[in-house]
View 1 (cartoon, one colour):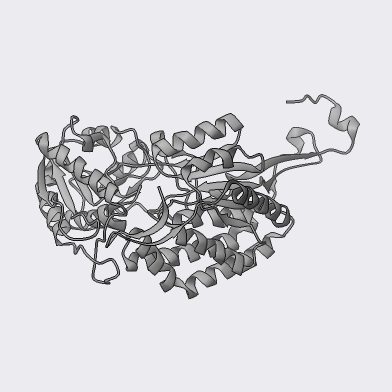
View 2: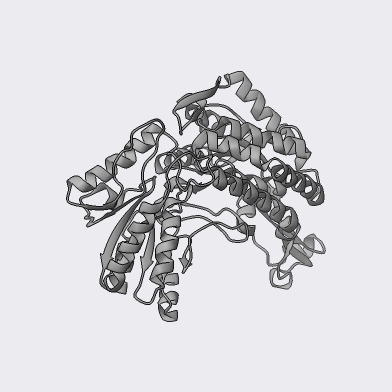
Length: 470
């Protein structure tokens, strides 16, 4: 795949880049490793100052950064602006909280026969980040902010269709004051990932992407004995029970399915509705979806822009046609529009069966699958009946049902009476084929730390009495 900016609203290639040579890539890794030696010697307070400066740059340059993101992958300009602001918020969050998250954690010294015992969190080195195009700034920032604040350095292999966003973020961290090379974007294809992760100077990797990419990274990292955090696909359930506010649920469902033009791992994709409210919900939901305005992503009145690639749009349409050919019913949308660009209409499909691709596959576009269930247990069975387990939504005003959903939904995130999203304050990640490890919160910062046990005794005699090694 060429490294290029191709405007998905027009299909025009706007800017191309040469992939780095082997020598250039090696120099980039060396630069990032040298920067780690500098960064680990700084204080949290120094790093916090640089991180706040990065946040200020993001705020000051928000509109231009948003324009680049919209041009590269098609999200609406309004959504791109919000993404830049969210990144600045996360940067400040980690600047403010890192001292507490990285503080030594006391242990029970008496229990381990020590005069002092504690846990210390220290950086591990260069971390490779393999990132996707759908949230080209936020997906990177939610790794970069905690990793840099912990004292690690980052090597970014971004998706090949968002090179300008990758280079832009490298420039932001450099101008903010971080040591040269502390965050380095490498313009290479996916075939270079094995070489990068096999390099002894690279100590860990994080990936947000497909199951296939996750398995590949995990295989390389396993061979090299290196830590990984994987955030993979999702086919999130959105369950609506009889006690729910159906109007509100249908309104949020529309946003939950079509956010980012439907290209979000945590977008609700399977709408599982109790039969008592199914007809009312289906009518309102389909009407809301059909009313969304599809068009120029730079137009502030546009609700849904183009999909990021022609191949992606063709795949979404193939999944819809497969469902229709096997007996599904389309309540709205489902037809390829004419004209330039890779647009696809908001679509609702019902009467789905396990024989259809939509039943088991993630649909990465503004297409909703609608399922009718007759009980709580059936709702849970359908919701959990997937290989994915990233986010989930449940709508009910029954406190007992809320507690049951919180326990029974097999996912890394459960949002009740609201839309699944990510916050710096909360850990984020999945289970099953949606990956492992956590981003965000203090847990995300500590994923790439050496969690070091420190035991201090009065002397060799006291330490040796009755002690044994691991």
